[in-house]
Amino acid sequence: AVGSRAPDFALTSVNGTPDQLSSMRGSTVFLEYFAVWCPVCHAEAPTIDQLYTDFSPKGVKVLGILANPFGPNYDTSNRADQAPAQKQDLLAYQKTYGVKFPLLIDPTFANVNAMGANSYPTLCAIDGAGIVRYANSGGIGYQELADALNKAATRA
Image 1 (cartoon, one colour):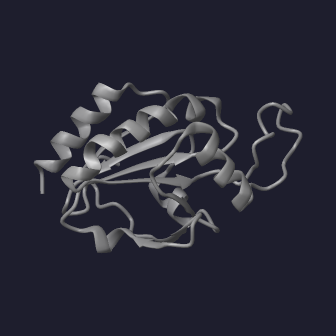
Image 2: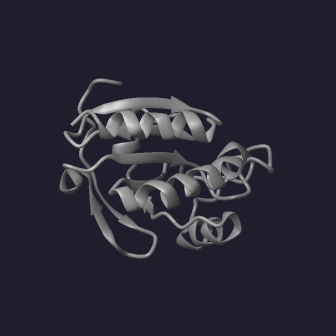
Image 3: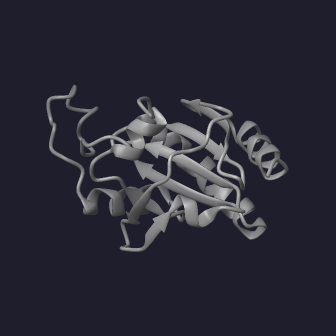
């Protein structure tokens, strides 16, 4: 919830790099909770990537977290294909949608559940003190997200 402390996580990226939210204290963090099968996530990937390009030089951490266990055919199969998302699905997602920001895997979905990310994408801006300053879901435009990051950056 906005105004609450973001739950800590220690997750590993699809490329094997570990990330821990508490180690990012002092930095503004933007999290996108996404599903590889989600058409809204697909459409929003360039927007999140633009945030990464524009805000990373300012010290903002932009991360995607896999928030749904199902693979890329879940939606197009009318939810019949419930094969789990695999590392290669995330790598294909990065390549297909031009994603340059790190994608993390939450193998037990503990952080996903703690954040209440049950729709895709769920988007959060966290200030340098670890407080959630913005949370929303669905296709959100660049300007709203950029404004949320700018506000979170001034609130630590």
